[in-house]
Image (cartoon, rainbow, N blue to C red; front, top):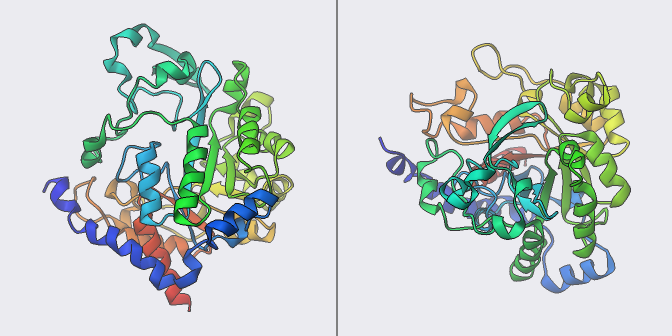
Amino acid sequence: MTQGARRTPARRTVLGAAGAAAVLGASTAIPTGTAHADEARADGRGHGHRSLPVPTVIAHRGASGYRPEHTLGSYRHALDLGAHVIEQDLVPTRDGHLVCRHENDITGTTDVADHPEFASRKTTKSIDGTSLTGWFTEDFTLAELKTLRAKERIPGTRQENTLYDGRWTIPTFEEVLRWAEEEGRRRGREVWLHVETKHPTYFRSLGLGLEERLARLLRRYGRHRANSPVFLQSFEPSSIQRLAKLVDSPGVVLLSGASSRPWDFVQAGDPRTVADLVKPEGLRWIASYAQGIGPTLDLVIPKDASGRLGTPTTLVRDAHAEGLILHPYTHRNENTFLPADFRRGTDPTAYGDSFGALKRYLETGIDGIFSDNPDTALLAAADFSAARD
């Protein structure tokens, strides 16, 4: 069966996402009103992250299950589907502009390989201890990057997304901030962003520090306050600590596999691993400068040797005890990304029992979830909320 044929039922899911608002009622929407939102921005009064619906659905790189990631098309589609928050990952250009790409290696997410004028820019670098060969944003000016077009990162899995290859350019974060303001006025509600600093230690070593550039933009667009509609996130705790000294926007420390160490810890000789950070004392330390954590879903519910979901850990309870919110990552609909007990059929690119998996994760008490398929996550959140009422 082709992926195109398989996706036909999903159109009902997309349409049904609009119905999630009706199921959840007023809890699905951030308090609205264009005049009210403008007034709040003017005098520094926003609603704050505690006003977001719980569970909060965060569109992972936009609606990346349906459009090439980190494009204005992906972000806009996520809003149209009803996502509460839209994620951006930030990397710099050679001339210091912040652009939205999941990685500074743009080999797989742009058509750079088709540009003979940039053939000599292909190189091999060590990024956070990993050797990579390709083209990197820090070797291009913004003007040069704007000659490239975005494309689907995993075309073998998301064949339909390739329809949109070449449609959008790489957006700057400033363009996204302006877009969010325009969409907020048009839709009559704040557009929330979830902004990640990528490889901050590496870029600081190149003289391209991310935090100061990000803070300047947040101040310019009034998103630097504790109640501003933005989260700031990083896998490097020191980046969130640095940002906490520059702006009051809520910070989130991202947490990878239990045995891994944040790259800034490696560089500083800090022996702690993620397993240390998810202990009560580690969470207490994070809570001294951040408002939340973004753990991998495996830290919330580990998988057994067969890839099936096991027993939830105490992470949700322990994090909440320290006043931290939890936004785990990443939910996706395709079998290849789902726990083994929620896969259906043998095609890794087919949709599995995504709702079943989401139910298990939401039952742990997490405050939100990153999803490539925000319409699916919204419907699951609606089911979960209805079952609690």
